[in-house]
Image 1 (cartoon, rainbow, N blue to C red):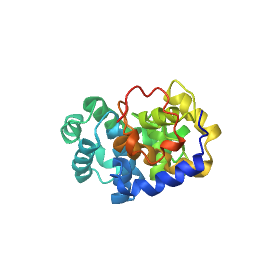
Image 2: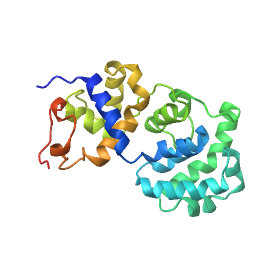
Image 3: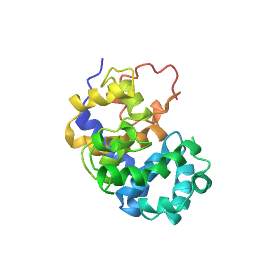
Length: 218
């Protein structure tokens, strides 16, 4: 079993990720520098390809500059703007409820903690952690399919669910890496460390990977 040197892995990932496409939520943050837009974009991005999220977010942001602007739109209008993101009808309903819940629970201000964000419609732990890390630049461990798969593939954690992975990483991963780990692993997962047949021959951190459960590779 290879030793997982997370300090070296992180350093290499940070350097090499400059050559990768920026994940969609990070792109939204770069373009808007607005936590409310990061929240909206993150909700849209669930179960949706990045290119679809980019286009849907762009259409939505033309009508919605701040969360309260959602009050001016009907559910059908929101549906039309965000289609064809995954589960667009459910997401449209969540977005419609967002201004009311935000006002009632948080005086209209987007909270910056995971515990508070998950009280908003359409926001689970993954979304909440990503908003905290990307939107507010605060330490948070966002575990999506890429983070869950890759950290187990390395052998850094041994978990069965994303929630278990989040809890394991919160205990094991140095806090200084929390904010950027999702962005780095999403880009790495999209370009090299695919779910099926990863590009191990091109991987720049292969020396630190135990390739757990890798059946085929390129």
